[in-house]
Image 1 (cartoon, helix red, strand yellow):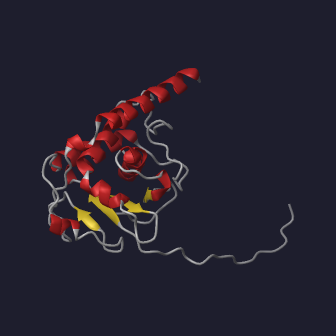
Image 2: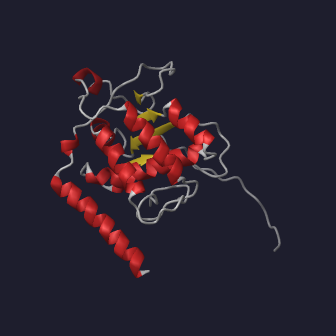
Length: 223
């Protein structure tokens, strides 16, 4: 129990340029979450986890190839109401771009992952919201707020409109990421309709997703 000494210790900052996307939350979702007395940033955190967990169903990648901004319970820094997804490899390897191209289908499946999970827990479980890459130890998650956010975003997205080629070229490093804005009051960009053809989800992908959910249910039943 004796204090010996203290020393300053620091590591150089980890900095690299990559590619990413963000989704600004619709004001409708922000208002509804406030009315329900739920935590907005916990809901955003749950949304990012759900997206990260279903990305491998749409893109051939490893779970560590993509990440998001995580929320810490003790964090006091002001945060904008947005979902941020980015490639974890310097320069980017195209995962965020693939999500951007299929954003409607990705959001739809992420919503279904939460609503159809048998846990029905507000903080989620390993089958729906927990992520091994979460630097916040899978705390500060709110599935109810996430459902509100996803449903509001889907109302603003079109399932059929394709992203134009000139918009594809606008993908830029995370320091100036592509803005998918659903808030008409956003001063940084006009609203951008992003969509993906639901047919991009093949039957094999559907079967795999269903098998994963059944396996999770069997694991829960066994415990």
